[in-house]
Length: 422
Image (cartoon, rainbow, N blue to C red):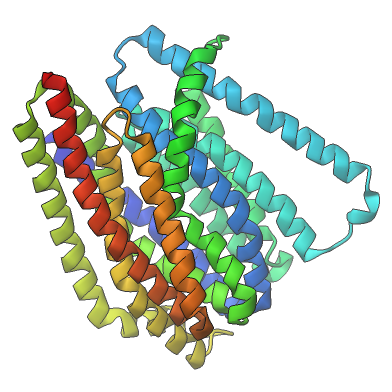
């Protein structure tokens, strides 16, 4: 078995474990709170900070990872790592201190108010997730994907421990445990890359990454903006809609991680190397084979799940405050969302392949923002059908974007090699 395949199997296995842990937390929440107002607030106040964190994660994953993969000089790698860490840690610490100061000078706010504390915890989670995303990207870029997958598991384990204490401390213990677990993951990651962290700061590196990365982030909003759009329509769509959409997303993404994580992490260094050493036809054939294999794995997975989904969802969710009616709505929502998740996961691969090329940030941004516009448009029509309408809008939007993105990837690669020959 090749080293690539061994690492792929290992990372996939660890990803399955992480998804299982995260999904267990969702099941505990479903049994304990059903699909009502309190969980709607929980998802609402986490959606905005985690959306911002996902933008940074997109910059790191799609812009920084190919750069790190191509850097072999220890001095240059240390300069990149140090500059990025100091540029993020300093402002985040300032934000936290200002936030604590504002709270301390308004003592009247320090009362038990679920929405207020969810806001505080949500902001904290978002800030720490930015730092964690950077550390995981640095590890992936140095081909330490196994360690990265291990660190990613820590917040899930922490959330599961917190979820076991819900009956004692209430729902707020879950975001608090997520915050602490993510912080621990970041600290361990920093220790692992400590030899590459110096007291240096290169503004050019920051300008280069975030200058282009800001454009990349706009494009990558397509993978997270659904939460903002869902939150926007949730108040009009009805109670429990936001919770049902989150359950559907978590369930399908947990399953989708079986086929997307290892290839998406391992393919980037390989394609980046081929762009330097190989000709157009070799690169094109490699990309084509990778996409075909990925699509086939997706088809097998989702066709199997479709016929088992009713039984799986009922077995997992039904019980406690999650009623038979909640189960039926969730099943219908998942069925309508399945095609969208299939196209979304394939688009993850296509975006990663696209961003291995230089100077494609604006193209990616236009495509990504186009998905958000499509989803907002379709959801404005179908949100009246509650979560089922939003799921239908999700599938329509991703199917259209998949076609556009596939054509764009192959066209951009062809143009890149034509220009290189010139």
